[in-house]
Amino acid sequence: MISDKLTQEQVEGVRRLLEPAQKVVVLTHMSPDGDAMGSALALYWWLKATKDVQVIVPNVFPDFFNWMPDVDTILICEKDAAKAKSLINDADLLICSDFNEPKRIGQLGQMAMEATCPKILIDHHLFPSDFADVTISYTDVTSASELVFRLIYQITNHQLPITNYQEMATCIYTGLMTDTGNFAFNSNYPEVYEIIAILIAAGVDKDAVYNHIFNAHTEGRMRLVGYCLNNKMRIFPDCHASLIYISGKELYRFNFKTGDAEGIVNMPLSIKDVYYSVFMREDKVADWEKERANGSKTKIKISMRSQGDRPVNIFCQEIYNGGGHKNASGGEYYGSLADAVNLFLSNYEKYFKKD
Image (cartoon, rainbow, N blue to C red):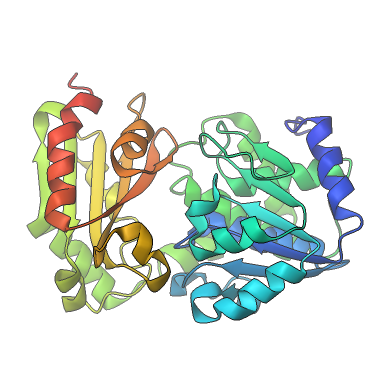
């Protein structure tokens, strides 16, 4: 049997806030990944039998998540901010999944902070802020999706729901699989595989989930990968590190779409003696973040990965205003790509092990 990781206080706190709530809004982070989509939609499927539930994401998610059950019900804030604000203002409860502070959800963050209803935070990143009434935060788990499973498992006294069980399980598995690189990292403990067994018993087709996400890329994505590895990858042997950085103009050449850069940061780690990998791509500053950008028209999105006892989250936090897990982190830089690269070059030797 899966152990009870969440405290009784956390479980009862969620129960206390859920019982009277009729309108529930689930929020997740910018540029939603598999764990954001999986945890948010799992909460949706769990609660929709008895609640009016709406998932809202800050911006567009990759096409390869379009197969997920009821994904078409998700509201994208950047396409209809007025509706998003109205739904949040009318909500009886906000559930925030897979982010540790409001700034990680873009303009939704301000809307959430202005809302008068209670809030629940479910997250697995470092340093969660204290904006929520109930916080469920554990950094030693695979994903927010695992925490959603554990919450449901404990709040149902280990029975798990019957209604919408397969759809919920499929969403949870998606988050588990993607946030561990198909169980290549952050998943080295037995209970996660016991959870997977329960999910598969619920009807999850793990091979289909894999194919939907990892075998559904565009031709442009494949050519972009080749270009990045052949033309843009730099290796720093002394620190066992790699760096790939690519401009907006270069992305345009490959008909770049949201999600096309997913996974590129992991690829250099397959090179012998490369233990740190950094990927940077240039993006435009959205209207809602112009004040934060201090006049810059571009921002650089930064992803970092590492192997073993070689953390990248502190580097991301201190240099790029980001954070994440020890071996998988991200950040952002408002300014030019050249300046973001120079910031890396000036600092990586202080943070990356040479042995």
